[in-house]
Image (cartoon, rainbow, N blue to C red):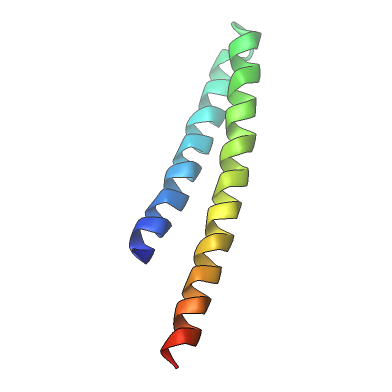
Length: 67
C-alpha cells in the first residue's frame, strides 16, 4: 500500500511538470489556457506535499505499531 502512495505523489509531480510545460508554450498564444494550467500546477504541488506528508505519517504510525 505504501508503494501506491509513493506513486501517486510522483503522479502529481508529473501533472505539475506537464502544466509548467503548457504554461511556457501557451503564454503568448492563449493566456486563458495558461492561467488554467498555472492553477493546475499550484494545486498539484500542494497535493504532492500533502500526499508526501500523509505517507510519512502513515509510515511512522506503522513503524510505531510494529514495536
